[in-house]
Every structure is written in C-alpha cells, then in structure tokens.
Length: 116
Length: 114
Image (cartoon, rainbow over all chains, first blue to last red; front, top):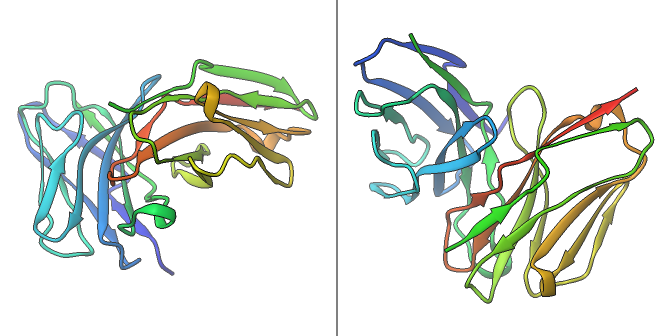
C-alpha cells in the first residue's frame, strides 16, 4: 500500500546525543515536510523539501538538520543543540503544485521523542 | 506572513449535538488554500477538505460542512449530529499560492460524550 512510514514510533534520547528520525514515502511525491507538535501549539514547520538535494528551513529549524538524497526519504536529525527536543514529530509529503493543483499533504503516524 | 488561529482549545459535546469549530486566518496572498485535518488518538493526520480562495462555495459532505467567508477570513467546520467517533483534534491549515509549506493552527480538541 502507498503511504508514509515513520520509524521508530517511540524514541528515547539521552541529553547531549544526536538522534535521527526516519521518514520514507512510496507515493512518488516530490515535496516532503517535517513538523513538530507540542501540546497546545499545533504543528510547527521544521524543514521542507520540494526536490531532491534541496530543502528550506521552516519556522523552528534551529537544532535540527535534514537531508534529501533520495526522493523517497527525508530523515530528520535532532541534534544536541536542540534545547527542548521532547515532542511528537510528524513527517508529511505532497505533490508539488500550484493553482488548483495545490495539494493536500499526507502524513505519517509520527515519532514520539523523549529526552531522558 | 501567514497565520492560522483556532481560538477554541477544547470543546466537549454530547452525542447528536451539532458543533462548529472555528478557524480564522491571515495571509497577504490573494490566492491561497485552506485545509482541515483530523488527528485521531493514533496520531496520524487525516485530510478532510481543501478549499481554494477563489471558490467561496460552501461544501457539505455527509455530516460535515464547511463555511468559507473570505470577508471575515474564516473557514469554519461544522459537524452535525456528532458521534463518539468524531472525538479527535482538528486542525485548520493554510498554504499560499507560491508556497509549498503549510501552516497550521493550534488545533481544537473535540470530545463527544455518549
């Protein structure tokens, strides 16, 4: 079945460690996104990518890094520079379009990261 | 700058009641797109509807209806005869014409009690 797969579902990190969250899609979408969800704050955009080897910072990119070496994959690294990384992370993808083709985004099931 | 405001943090209703979730947005784009998503307890966001700014026709899909009012920058969502399965967090989102980043509101947690 086509969709977006995020792994792992739960992740625990020690303070000072980097950790990488996986996101894979088989929808043949060009655009991919990472969002962070905190209680009461909705979803905030971390990074997005419209094409392989290119990505842009969102509103809260500090302390995060991404890569887009393949169309299907958009891993997110939470670095030790991120001061409060405990959150729910959602990956999404969409076709790239404008006008009436402006597409909705499809979401994975999320990764819950906890710093211990 | 684009911004989406969902002023209602939590709403609780009894089954079969009608409920309206409010969404107010800000954008400088003349063409833009509005979305509603549902997030059940499993965490995955489920797409419900997309509305283009040049199409102010309201839409009904079963028990769901959406009221888009460009004059007040609002895109409200009504569930008629609510059911327990409607319990979820609902997000309103906005995308500008030339952007591929989607901006979300803070979400409204709807609880439908039997």
